[in-house]
Image: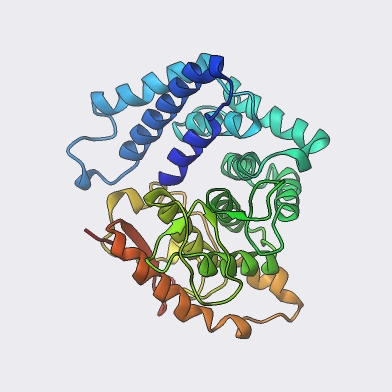
Length: 332
């Protein structure tokens, strides 16, 4: 949900003063729709309301009603709006879903390398959620474009800047996760480089800054503009990538996971669907004889990273090193 809220705020930023009121309203609606859907898809025991409680449905329906007639001109915005409808069970033929799908196809044939990182990542997430098998070729093109946008240091950021951007980098990590969900192997070197960048740019206090100051070595340095939202982005991305690399457990297998007591917003809402998240890196990039021996030292670094981040009093998700079980704990 944190990622969705960050998406909503990001895609609604607009430098034009005349567009600001509409952007602010769109951001608010996406926030309400996201919150309502998170409540609706969480286990009932954790909430005083049910998915069909009037107040929950009112939030969702109000947000979706607004989005019926209000969209965003950017690819990422269209994909985020479409995801709101898709997550509520709308038909794939819904106008907003078809609009986003058409925009993805148009971008892939005309301007895929010109898309910003947010739009590129959201396109992968949307297409994978909509139907990974049906959109496999299109997803592969966006995945290739995302890899091209990666900076030499391993992070992602603005085209005209050398520095990596934690906010943008999280969308690469999220897209890698979605690729793994549908059995497409993200490039191993790309995943490793991004993991290393995130570990290097963590603030000594445990958080992450908006744009990472990369010391180029394992000694952490003070980061600028640290915040809880960037902590969520940096920590979530580190754990996702570490899990893909096999450094935080024996792989990613949702339907085999022995999920212990976890915050309700972190528990899966689609257990009946049982999507498999096999460690496809093992049969993808790593199939060429590449091993993870050089990465074994990172296992301890990720554990240390989690401990530092937990000082900030936010929800931290950790992955068991003894099995593929996912363990979550809430820190106060």
